[in-house]
Image (cartoon, rainbow, N blue to C red):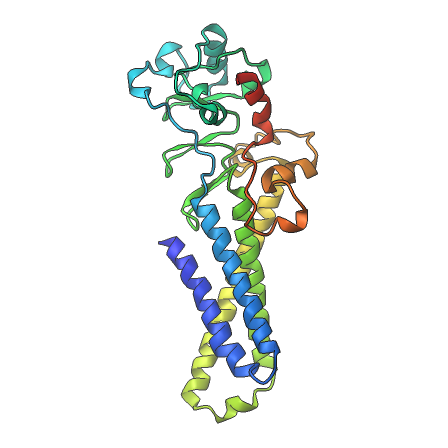
Length: 308
């Protein structure tokens, strides 16, 4: 429902800007067509980024297909009631590693499915990786560092920041870039719409005087609603952009911030953290939701080379 509301608000802004502002105030010159094209490009980019963020897997760790036929990881070694139990994970992994099952491909090896109790990693893990691993009692499996369980998505998500109702998806390792792009394009669209609304109030409109009074009142109503919508969405997305940039540069997700665990990698350069979240390529291209990520976060690279 919230996703539909987001689409309705974007389409309403496009309707008001084009039909009630540009066509009434900028029809006598080329600038009207230029503003209409630019504004619709911003709307399209916001829709595109939202769709990619909503449809992209945020990093959900697949559960073992044969989980029902295997013993529970919580029944093998006694453990406290906490869902995060690195000491138990370390003990179980160190004592009884088992081979990778047949039919488990490299995707499952990377995704961490055999970080669970069934099956376990083939080789020994370094102590730092073992300490960072946790056990999810709901999924009943081991999970890589920084993964958290989402009750809405019914699974553990790598580097989970939060579950966003505006995209009906979690914001995690694989779609944080698109979420940030969606926020940027919505903020640009809000600023653009607010600027055009302000121009319509300040600029003289000779043709508007001959319009019926009901039409002028309708135009004023749409302009006021657009201005309020631009302020609300623009302010909200600006705050969210600052929050996401702070999370990326501090290397601390929203959940980690609430738990006050601190930066996961305090000595990692900000440039490397930005490239991890936004992908390779020129920084100027990071706002365009066209290039896909490498899907290999930094913190799991060491784990992958150890397991595979």
